[in-house]
Length: 73
Image (cartoon, rainbow, N blue to C red; front, side, top):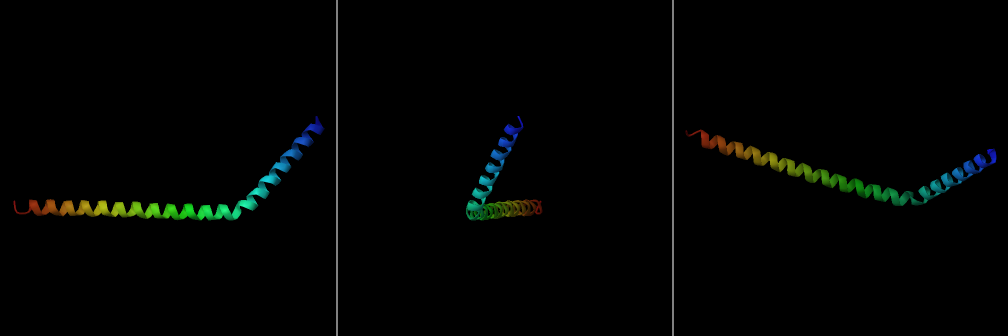
């Protein structure tokens, strides 16, 4: 039983080492991917902000038009 546990522990350690090694290998790739994702996210946010500003502008224009139409009466 104890031998089995020890063996399992060793397997787990080996797996962890392997994962760490893979992470170290893939680190530059991951970083570049992360950077790319970040840039995409920023672009998306900017796009959304632009859309929001445009909508706001349209609403303000609409309000001004309505006010202008209401004033003569």
